[in-house]
Length: 500
Image 1 (tube, rainbow, N blue to C red):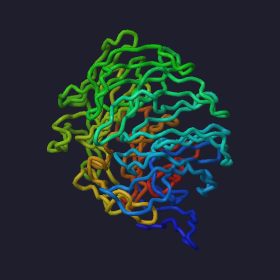
Image 2 (cartoon, rainbow, N blue to C red; image 1 turned 45 degrees about the vertical axis):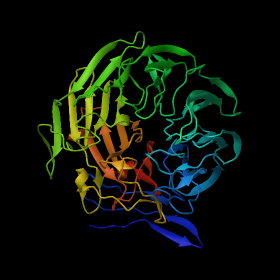
Image 3 (cartoon, one colour; image 1 turned 135 degrees about the vertical axis):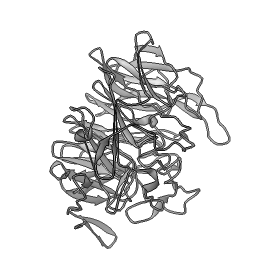
Image 4 (cartoon, rainbow, N blue to C red; image 1 turned 60 degrees about the vertical axis):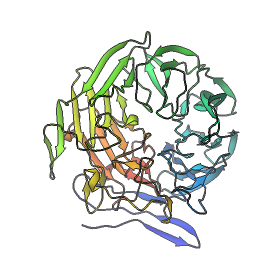
């Protein structure tokens, strides 16, 4: 086994990346060979945005002072631009915030939103109080700031539509009154902002909460914003359970409908023109419901007690076997077989998810109702592959590239549970050329060929860390040449030719 790791030279306090390739080969599924590894100046959680010859992401401004309760607290974010081919940092901009929140808390913090970009502008978001639009050369176009509240931040995504950005921002209406723990928590509203001027084109009248994971989808061949109002386990908003289809043209309500009981933090998505609900029935089985936006009726139900096919790793290869939950003594699960709330993803007429009592990726073929589950590795290191949470190796805290621990809650409910995914909001997977690129929390990239039924032949993986010290919170970016992945430590390019 040979390792030719990338070299990083420190000279007079400056970081310089030397391009190289990792050449650890464990099997056809291995430690990734990388075209570059660029050290990041500080930790952060955004995904990577690729646009032309540029890559964009956000990190925290340098963290200083002592940890408090296992966390750093910080208000200020830095937006950074890198060369897509070399990984060289080209420029950065400051986005100061108005509230010092926890760093890497619950898999979400002020750096969580992935930047968005067209061929001229890029928009960075500091969830603790600033939105900024810049040219690809780093010139400020406009900024928008606000007094940030103190939720445990989970504020979904930004979307580009034509020449505008669609994003949720705090409203003036209070959702939760002040308590001893939290100040007043506002509702959020979706805004559409013109890129070239910062002018607000519309503000949707619908009130959402801070954890609503809205999306943009297609309903009856027209584009819609998909959103909902669902209480969280620790936040009760008193608005009932409602689903919404909003117009991306003016933010108006196209459909409003009641929802059945649903798991908090679910991603709001459509499948076959129906709103998909991950049901909180309290049963051990995983239950998904299709809701008709025209009338709120349940049109279909999918329940997984035993999948039609289950593939488990026997130590050497996959084998078809009977499904049995692996983690039956987990107090948090309470014996339920629900998926991790935010890992349900629709691709065409398929539903993919991570069933976290089993370290398994599941797939429902909604046309036929057939279900498949496949065990996935939690962590891939040079010395071992962890298939069970008991085999998982944690670092001592989450460390930035210089080796400083900036968060000591890595193995808790507010850190990384059961290895593969975190508390509530792991990264959205990216679909490119028929393949789903899905990062778990421990630096493992799952690649699923969605043109085939889920099976060992349609699934492979690669790891970005040979020693298990790279925690990945944001979505990768994918183009025709490469996959771009960021951990809390590095920005990494994996050429498609180097994946195996």
